[in-house]
Image (cartoon, rainbow, N blue to C red):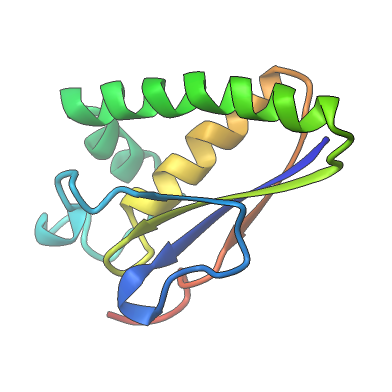
Amino acid sequence: MKIECRSFGFKNGADAQSDFVFDVRCLPNPFYIENLKHNTGLDVDVREYVLGNEQAKEYLEKIKDMLLLVVSVKENFGVENLKISFGCTGGHHRSVTFAIEVGKFLSQKGHEVEYFHRDIDIED
């Protein structure tokens, strides 16, 4: 199965292209940390900040568990493509972090993974 892990910012509209959308706005926002504000979830320091939060770690693990089941069920029905999106406020930090982490996880499980970060080049 080919899986696309996507990120977006809700302030620019929800991602209507996805099969599953997860809202990560409930997690601490690196935008308010001066040395992280202009970085993105593509940067290790942002991912470490986001995933340094215990609730973020737990949320990520629950998402991974659920997606293992979802992917298995979809594969059994012959689904060849799956789009999974993560949304935060601006689409630069938390959503990108989660898209990357889930993509790495699914890739390690043998799935072909691509990434699409819709809002990463949009200024705040």
